[in-house]
Amino acid sequence: MRRHDPLTGLLNRPAFEAELAHASGATGVGAVSGQDALATFNIDQFRLLNETYGHARGDRALRDVAGLIQRLSTPTDRSARLGNDEFAWLLRGTDLPAARARCETLLERIRTEGVTDLGSHVRITASVGLVAANGVQDASTLLQCADAATLAAKADGGDRVHEWQEDDTRLAERRGALRWIREIREALDEDRFTVFAQPIVASDPAARSVPAVEALIRMRTREEEIVPAGRFMPAAERYGLASRIDDWMVKAVLAWLTPNPARRKELRHVHVNLSGRSLGDPAFLAALEVALVASRALLPSLCFEVTETALIENLDTARDVMTRLHDLGCRFALDDFGIGHSSMRYLKRLPVDYLKIDGVFVRDMARDPEAAKLVGQIHRLARTMGLGTIAEFVESDEIRSRLRGLGVQEVQGYAVGKPAPLDEAVAACAQRTPTRGAFRPR
Image 1 (cartoon, rainbow, N blue to C red):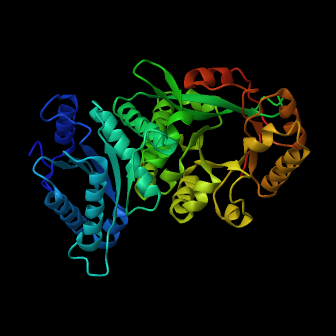
Image 2 (cartoon, helix red, strand yellow; image 1 turned 60 degrees about the horizontal axis):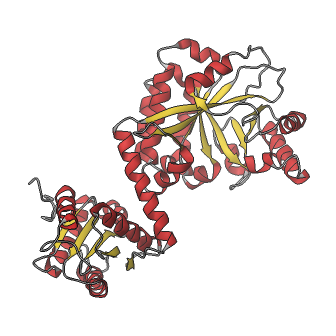
Image 3 (cartoon, rainbow, N blue to C red; image 1 turned 90 degrees about the horizontal axis):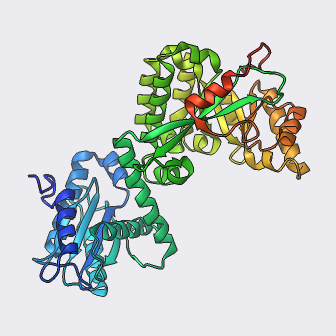
């Protein structure tokens, strides 16, 4: 029971990794060699199959696929179920051409007879990543290479085998992303994320209105290196970890606000980003609503930032939750405005309070008159609809002055303040004496 998956009877992940590590580090009999190959594969659209036919039939599909692997295996092969619909197959004494032929046979069998009890009109397929051992004495590297090739097979449409090649730049990128996935999971388990912040202030330095900050997530490595979000969030978004990171961030901000009510007076809002994956995850949105309702007194201090592209892709899922949270006091900012699906129709229907003008336009204002015109048009649109405007990537006093001339109320960027640990950023903001007259959106 410790070594085998109870559903399929195959080895489980720890047992397979242990056997692979033993074979990788061995010499002589049992060692992974150039005549061995490793395949990993996923069932294509397995989540859709589960949602359409139910988990009981999804489990049946997993058992059927496991049975096919076992019937096609030799006595020296090893096979495992590594995760939900993820399998691994170590083909012993099989060079790469022969291994590919065996994997193609497996795909054909899955395609034609892989699922019972779903009717003759239902067919499933799989995406296979294949790597030759070639004397590599590192089990972790073998799995990473095979996983990267599996992702490439899935990205190419599925129902195919993709071989790992060392000089394949696309696979190298995916392998790098997989390393980040491992780092993210370990950092979440070990609570090695931390919150930085960047000030959002009035475009007019003399206004001295109550500032806000945008909370920015950072990862701490075990060596105490601080890693910015731009290095790990793309992988988190692509491979399904963004919602866990967003959940951590929301809870961290709430925990920071809770014990010290004075912090709520020093800041108008703490802006918190929600990823596109989170907006499309009903379970995350439901859990978010529960957590925020339990901290109702803090809600007027929160402003959630969502990109317009992500919001439109998940409009039906996100709109109702956003409306309820807005009614409870949360505010919302539409981030990167101007480069997505800008539309008066959906903008009018959403509980949005601020438009954050994309930095692509802001950075070019000093040398591109057309960029300045676009910023002015976005600001006028926002004012017509009763929304505030925040300009991102303000990197010089000249650009800040131009934004002030256009009427843009608030600015954010290196000319205002660089990201810093949350307490330090707020302490810097607290030096600004608040006065009346700050713009208050609807």
